[in-house]
Length: 105
Image (cartoon, rainbow, N blue to C red):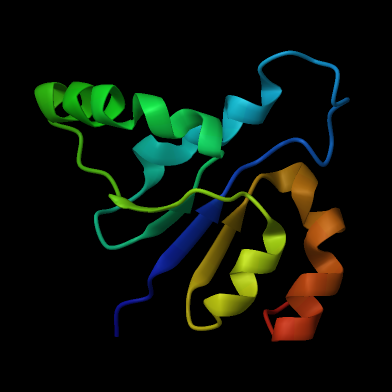
Protein backbone atom coordinates (compact mmCIF):
# COMPACT_ATOMS: atom_id res chain seq x y z
CA UNK A 1 0.00 0.00 0.00
CA UNK A 2 1.34 3.40 -0.97
CA UNK A 3 1.48 5.97 1.79
CA UNK A 4 1.07 9.46 0.47
CA UNK A 5 2.55 12.42 2.29
CA UNK A 6 1.61 15.99 2.88
CA UNK A 7 4.47 18.37 3.58
CA UNK A 8 4.21 21.54 5.66
CA UNK A 9 7.61 22.97 6.49
CA UNK A 10 6.47 26.45 7.43
CA UNK A 11 8.71 27.83 10.18
CA UNK A 12 6.75 30.90 11.19
CA UNK A 13 5.42 29.15 14.30
CA UNK A 14 8.94 29.13 15.71
CA UNK A 15 10.54 32.31 14.35
CA UNK A 16 9.88 35.96 15.02
CA UNK A 17 7.48 37.41 12.48
CA UNK A 18 9.70 40.44 11.90
CA UNK A 19 12.48 38.34 10.33
CA UNK A 20 12.31 39.07 6.63
CA UNK A 21 11.91 36.13 4.25
CA UNK A 22 11.24 33.34 6.74
CA UNK A 23 7.68 32.96 5.44
CA UNK A 24 9.20 31.59 2.21
CA UNK A 25 11.09 28.79 3.98
CA UNK A 26 8.22 26.38 3.29
CA UNK A 27 9.47 26.03 -0.28
CA UNK A 28 12.76 24.42 0.73
CA UNK A 29 11.11 21.04 1.22
CA UNK A 30 9.97 20.74 -2.41
CA UNK A 31 13.04 18.69 -3.31
CA UNK A 32 12.05 16.03 -0.77
CA UNK A 33 8.63 15.44 -2.28
CA UNK A 34 7.50 12.79 -4.72
CA UNK A 35 5.09 13.53 -7.58
CA UNK A 36 2.12 12.00 -5.75
CA UNK A 37 2.70 13.98 -2.54
CA UNK A 38 1.02 17.19 -1.49
CA UNK A 39 2.98 20.24 -0.42
CA UNK A 40 1.75 23.29 1.43
CA UNK A 41 3.51 26.45 0.29
CA UNK A 42 3.21 30.07 1.27
CA UNK A 43 1.08 32.00 -1.25
CA UNK A 44 3.94 34.46 -1.85
CA UNK A 45 5.78 31.65 -3.68
CA UNK A 46 2.97 31.23 -6.22
CA UNK A 47 4.33 33.92 -8.56
CA UNK A 48 7.64 32.00 -8.71
CA UNK A 49 6.13 28.52 -9.18
CA UNK A 50 6.74 28.30 -12.95
CA UNK A 51 10.37 29.35 -12.58
CA UNK A 52 10.92 26.89 -9.73
CA UNK A 53 9.37 23.95 -11.60
CA UNK A 54 11.24 24.78 -14.82
CA UNK A 55 14.50 24.70 -12.86
CA UNK A 56 13.63 21.36 -11.25
CA UNK A 57 12.77 19.99 -14.70
CA UNK A 58 16.11 21.14 -16.15
CA UNK A 59 18.07 19.41 -13.42
CA UNK A 60 15.92 16.27 -13.53
CA UNK A 61 14.52 16.47 -10.01
CA UNK A 62 11.01 15.06 -9.69
CA UNK A 63 8.74 16.75 -7.16
CA UNK A 64 5.15 17.26 -6.19
CA UNK A 65 3.02 19.50 -8.34
CA UNK A 66 0.11 19.13 -5.92
CA UNK A 67 0.36 22.48 -4.17
CA UNK A 68 -1.88 23.96 -1.54
CA UNK A 69 -1.13 27.67 -1.35
CA UNK A 70 -1.81 27.86 2.37
CA UNK A 71 0.58 26.89 5.18
CA UNK A 72 -2.07 26.67 7.87
CA UNK A 73 -1.78 23.51 9.95
CA UNK A 74 -5.57 23.24 9.86
CA UNK A 75 -5.27 22.07 6.24
CA UNK A 76 -3.89 18.77 7.55
CA UNK A 77 -7.38 17.90 8.83
CA UNK A 78 -8.47 17.49 5.20
CA UNK A 79 -5.88 14.75 4.59
CA UNK A 80 -6.33 12.15 7.35
CA UNK A 81 -4.95 9.32 5.19
CA UNK A 82 -1.66 11.08 4.41
CA UNK A 83 1.54 10.81 6.39
CA UNK A 84 2.48 14.26 7.63
CA UNK A 85 5.92 15.83 7.30
CA UNK A 86 6.27 18.94 9.45
CA UNK A 87 9.24 21.17 10.09
CA UNK A 88 10.48 19.64 13.34
CA UNK A 89 10.03 22.75 15.46
CA UNK A 90 6.41 23.00 14.37
CA UNK A 91 5.50 19.65 15.92
CA UNK A 92 4.81 21.09 19.36
CA UNK A 93 2.55 23.75 17.87
CA UNK A 94 0.74 21.14 15.75
CA UNK A 95 0.21 18.58 18.49
CA UNK A 96 -3.37 19.67 19.36
CA UNK A 97 -4.31 19.38 15.68
CA UNK A 98 -2.49 16.08 15.23
CA UNK A 99 -4.24 14.59 18.23
CA UNK A 100 -7.64 15.89 17.09
CA UNK A 101 -7.40 14.28 13.65
CA UNK A 102 -5.89 11.06 14.90
CA UNK A 103 -2.27 11.09 13.79
CA UNK A 104 0.13 9.27 16.09
CA UNK A 105 1.74 11.59 18.61
